[in-house]
Amino acid sequence: LSAARDRFILPQGTVYLDGNSLGPLPAAVGPAVSDVVTRQWGQDLITSWNLNGWWHAPGRIGDRIGRLIGAAAGQVMCGESTSVQLFQALTAACRMRPGRSVLLTDGANFPTDQYIADAVARLFGLTVRRVHPSEVGERLNSEVAVVSFSVVDYRTGELFDSAAITELVHESGSLMIWDLAHAAGALEVALDDIGADLAVGCGYKYLNGGPGAPAYVYLASRHIADADLPITGWHGHAEPFELHQHYRPADSIERARIGTAPLLSMLALEAGLTAFDGISVAAIRRKSLALTDLVIDFADNYLTPWAEVVTPREEHRRGSQVSLRVQHAYEVCQALIARGVVGDFRAPDLLRLGFGPLYLSHTEVLSAMLAVHDVLAEQAWRDPAFSVRAAVT
Ligand SMILES: Cc1ncc(COP(=O)(O)O)c(C=O)c1O
Image 1 (spheres, protein in one colour):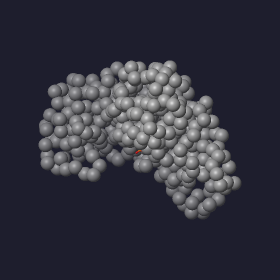
Image 2 (cartoon, rainbow, N blue to C red):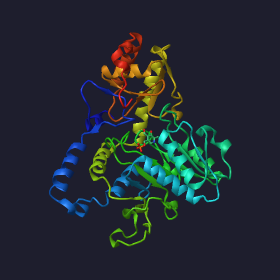
Image 3 (cartoon, rainbow, N blue to C red):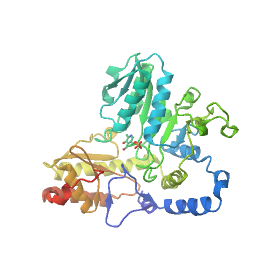
Image 4 (tube, rainbow, N blue to C red):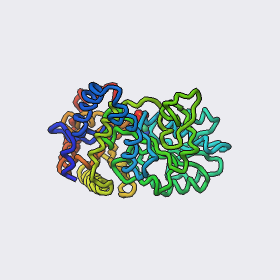
């Protein structure tokens, strides 16, 4: 995949290990956004809705994302934030399972996933139970309406068996919602094949769509007709330009639209996705595993006793990140950034290193690990400058 590196613009001297938080800038984005601003908006003005394909952008980009997550066309809609899409998906799923009283989520799930599960449960009078995905079988029964998990644990990088879990969930007649935030673009997700019901994900991590890039929602085609989505904006109407007084959802995935899309961000995401052109997700996954194998080996051999690998070692249980438990993880992370190695910190004690296989080389990753070694061995993190906490940690 070394040729794919040219599809990105990265600062000289930086090894970027935070593409699982904000993907780097794909080279195609600048020219595309410039065209959207100067020609499409500046010259073509409102005719761009037809002339430049603005109206169909959410579905068109949804289909493009669908190709990366194993979803056939017509089931993915791009737009909004992951949090809004979670609200949409959870609400629609709860409405499809009336009479059931429990919503299951993972107590280690990303905060927004848990907060929105709690909020939706409050609307429907459901009880939220928290269970680790590997133990879901013990909590499933005919009371469970919906199960909502992430495919990859954002902190530890643990990858869950989405096929087996979805199958178990279906055996109890419940619906399964997957959050693909830390999986899409980094590893194979086969939504159609595993029989997923609904899914959401964000555009700004491994999809490299840019800060605040729109998210997406997947509704399996068998559920679209029954998906009673709560936010009934006019773009999801069956006949939006008839301007009816009352809402009637589109028959297709178009019902997952809400209001006017943020075209500048959305078209930046579309351009960013071209970095995947002609590259299979299987090849991306192979390189991701090679890089994370290298990091785990290095940590085992050279970072003990300072750092402990918390990411599962088995390949089938590992996403595209390696999380190291280290004392003073915040300060260590800052000291690394000062040396050009950009990872991130997750409270209270994790140094999280994410690997974007499209733009990282093995040599760079090795040099980053040597920097981790040096910062720990030299205790460079002790410099008081590295303990100053900014608003975003
Ligand atoms: C699993 C998961 N879901 C959701 C989000 C973020 O949601 P939003 O895009 O609404 O900020 C994140 C952010 O890191 C995440 O890791």
